[in-house]
Image (cartoon, rainbow, N blue to C red; front, side, top):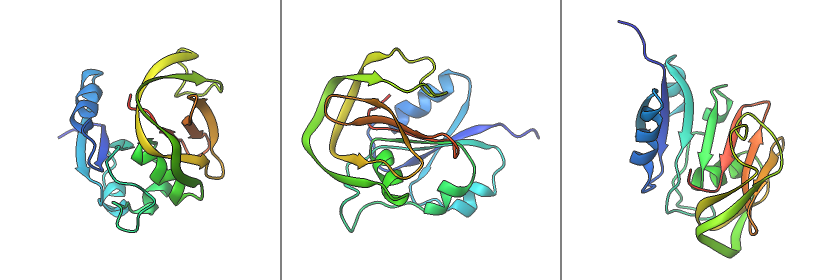
Length: 171
């Protein structure tokens, strides 16, 4: 039986997880939703996984009882995209600084892309995004470039060598 390439979504409790999975399927890719605590070993044992998405969620990465991930996932060499909480968790795990937002963003806001990358190739330089966060990345983790911003926050970043991208907004 042939193996179907797939994108795995690690679910941190976002209300948009099913929507993300559906959108991936709409572009012709198979997607599978797994619990946030899925181990790196489990993911590494499945060669059909071609990308990993860390979803958003209602938790704060600043609390001791936060939903956490196996940080070895970040070293698997599989492309990763962290959305909202997923962005904050990746930066925290990799040495960035996260803090409570001085001005939380909820709703539509303008995002300005100022650094080209493969993830920004088809995105207009200025566009409206949906934000919903109380925490934010203050200093990106080493190796990450800021790719886009809103008036209040880093909105998009990428570690181009590791093929790890993060977005504070909900795509």
